[in-house]
Image (cartoon, rainbow, N blue to C red):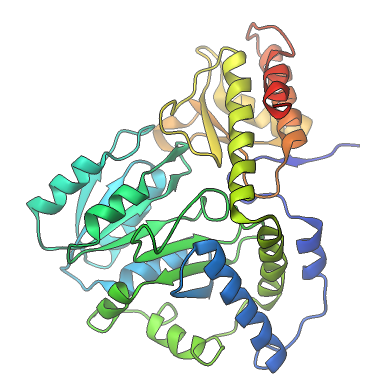
Length: 378
């Protein structure tokens, strides 16, 4: 017999209430019953996004919401600036280039956050920039960006600020309106504690104006169609009915705790995880700009990082994530977002200690678990 523990930066574990909601009989989506559910979900998302503007629900992964953001506000040959600090920043670049957008890249060293002064310099150098694409939490590196400062820089320019909050929403603070974020995109399978399959997109009036002039091709992700349907509390195409039902259960849980309590819980989980790995003599990949949703840790010299992740998963049932691209085998990523609590962290650290010992890494057994428990006892 073996229990499985999911400590990856998406998908994340599902609360019992969410699993139970998905077991309910399905209903038809063109009915008053589903309209009520859709309205409830839309209002709940506004709470989590911290916005008064529309939040659209798309049947897609978070990447679908990213693509929708690009094709609805820009036309071929328009100029965009992408802050590229990891694998998912690169995704913004790939989407823009796929649609013929003239894409400038602000490269940031992996493991660090963008410096607002660098962003300001690039904006002043090219007044043709119509959109700036950023990432709240760069999941590939465990870095969080200062979106509030980015918003202050951009709000009085003609450009719009577009934020990928796929792994951060519902786990760390993101004040969409107060921080002047024009578009925020997210997905269901991370902080919102759902399976993959829903994408979300908030839209400011400033960004909505750009949609009227965009000439990029789109059909399924046409936000004009989405808004027309949402104004009637409907969807333009068949929605993921079961996931919307489950979304309402997840949103109820978040609202019951309150955002500040949710954010504080994630901070403590992150603090405990980092205390544990440092107590083991391991080095954080992003010591200065670490996110409260996932911690990236350097694999000790001489150890096989891919084997470490594989052994934890296949032998002991504890799934963490490895590194991506040039970080493959060099870091592992330990998530603490969504429906994860302190004993999940203790179990994960205990398993990490066991596998590190088996791989020949020298340290005092129990040191990491002790450090984490001391944080939780505060």
